[in-house]
Image (tube, rainbow, N blue to C red):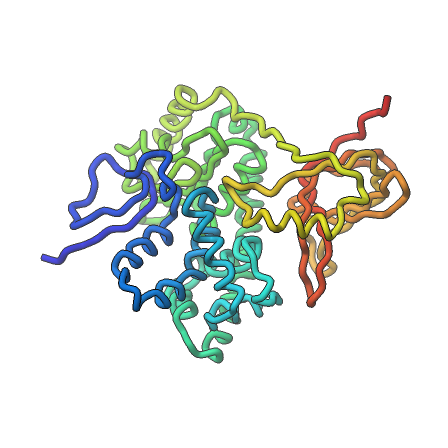
Length: 413
């Protein structure tokens, strides 16, 4: 007897819920500017429709920081309305008017005034996600709504601790799952990596699936089996492979499922696991590319090493915000000599490295490589592909060269 409005952005099922309205941009034409809005954008558009009177303009504007945070955190393609609302929301975020977000940024040693999409993606989003994965997501709602600076600081400290715990648990589960993959070479001959075990924490399996997909260049599905309950699965894909369509093709075996082409989740009874795996691999062999498309790097320009500096980084930043649909431009600097590498952290071992390179004129340069791969040999001449970013820390700005790839230097004719 209650009218219900449902907002969502995931792929539409064959049968829609019996609601007063289902508001989902997937109902729009493919070229509609609102088509790529994620859940927060859909909810905001509904709120704007309900608060359409001029007297509500400040109420609508006051929510723009949350819109930007949600769109970036959900990795929405930054085209059309998505890009517009992020551009509108970032200035509001930088004003630091929301005590909870300001406290969360302070916990990450970031000044609100310099927050950008990178801040959201790598600092705010992981902390808020840690609540839902390991704690009580209601604390995140309280953080975003509280007007008390003191309470915001308390909640931010709690969330920061959970985020540290989330990182540690993710590393542990990834190590366990990667070991299972390495033990079974046949798994890498299939279109997708599918791995399940009873000792996996379901709160981080989505993050682990994402790392597997990135590491092995193919879709990855991680399933956590639970005693006396349906198993929980999470999937991440690569460009060109619709993993949600693959999972939906096995709907008869599932308790529930949902998602979109790059990410999906589901539940199934443990005894259905073998049939599910066979069905997924069969669907992918028949419907997905024979091999995931090799990722090509789109290079914006080849530049001299001495032009990879702060003024150019500041000019590039004006083209932001960056993300899917509007990636950061990649530059190549040629003929440097690799000197050495070190861990980015002095306190703990990480997967990230700082690389030190001497330009042809002898000028030293430092590049940061997140989730570093194999390194050049010391003294090897190299060409480096990198993003040029503005790094802000302790009130200072400097150019950061974020390494994307390297190759042995091409011999000069």
